[in-house]
Length: 275
Image (tube, rainbow, N blue to C red; front, top):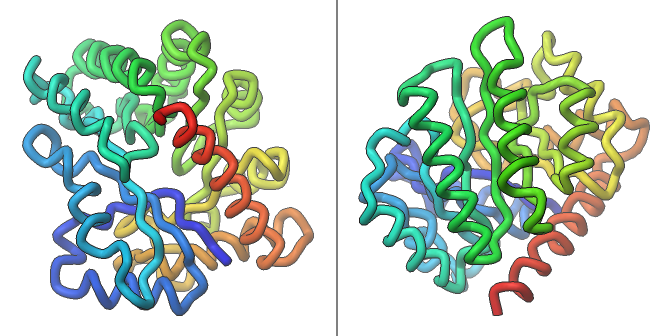
């Protein structure tokens, strides 16, 4: 069985066939999906909760959990009332994580100082809610600047909580892997692990301890080869498992079973802390 640890099920790109997308995932062996609840920022931060409530319990549909949070792209939209709303949403039973949050210096849709402040505030709220954080980190081209700032902020503001988190769609270096593992984080691999120029990602997937990794699609983005360029969907998470298996010299079934067990163990702790 497979778990897609990061998918944007709320996106308008699934509006026409969301039920069919979920059914295809089920038939591909996907038992659980974590639906990421950043939406389009303030005003849509309950989007993943709504998807989970609409589809959980339907036949031939994976179990859907939800996260909440504000993506760094939308950081400058935040008002004080939005933080209050997030505090309330964190108590909903479908919510098991806070994110994706972090820093994005590639697009700089929000000023970097604002990104940092919103990131810090969300780490404070996630700690109060006893929810692990799900990190988005994208540096500017030909630089590790966002990685350096993001990991330092986690060390300063998050590590003492002991809650850990997930580096989603990992694209960094082995030095970043080592630092993240020391901070108590899981490393999650997406469809870009199959791209020809993604040698650094494959190197990380071969080296990360087997009990510290997840797999994901980041749907509808980053469809793995041979679907690259098309809309990604949770049914394709098996392609990620296949590439991880290739670089580790094991079977895709072994990757599926282990990463599913990792997910359940990590987020079962979340449920225990919230209750």
